[in-house]
Length: 42
Length: 304
Image 1 (cartoon, chains in turn cyan, red):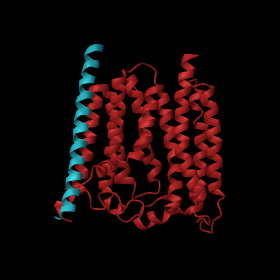
Image 2 (spheres, rainbow over the protein chains, first blue to last red):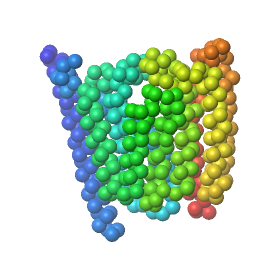
Image 3 (cartoon, rainbow over the protein chains, first blue to last red):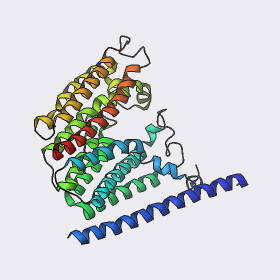
Image 4 (tube, each protein chain N blue to C red):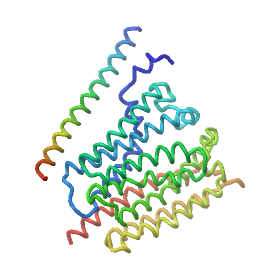
């Protein structure tokens, strides 16, 4: 793997990691909000 | 292709597996079903319901791309997709699709209600098993019956609010169901060579251009009066009725141009299918505006 290929690989890997982070934070926030709504309205 | 090559995928490939452009219309029609339904749903739960519909649609896209990877590799329009292009391993795409499908149904059931979750599960099963695996490659009626899969979102949105399935969401279902053939066959007319090469029995491939043009007009003739049913049932008011009529006349003109397009004796266009391309674009705008008009009308109808 050349330096340029390694850099491109790292860039894509970072992209995937950030995407996973966004999904996980989003889902955690949503589950928290759903729980609050359910507890308040039932 | 070595497995090591697959592991280096871009986030955009995983997003592409969800067919985001198809998802937009699904999300929109689901949202409309949710907005026009009588009753109240907390915005957080409403958002969750729409998210579940979107994720389920994406899951269907991913499973569809896994199953259709052989024909996608042949068609010009689809050969750049992540699986045929070798950027995502087929099994990974299938696992991704199944995970999202199961997750969306579970979340809908737990956060919203079991009826909405059930209809969502039925729509996924219909798209994957009935349309993708059974009909698509076997019959020219593939998209007629497959269109039902795309017609579920307003029913799911409605069920999310009311916990039931009533006449109005079924009318909305019928509208998308009848809209799908003229929409898809317009595309099939100008993508005919692709479908023929891939051996997909789309109507223009099997029955020819002339018959396809005739069918497009017939379905649109059924669709336009059908869009007035919500008004005839007293569910919506004049705002919607006028919008549906004007849009319907526009759609009829558009498909009529497809019917009278200059063509050879087999029905192949001599104008590079300009009218069919225009009708395809119009059909998308048509459904968006029609459903938006229904929601706006409900807002006006309820506040006046």
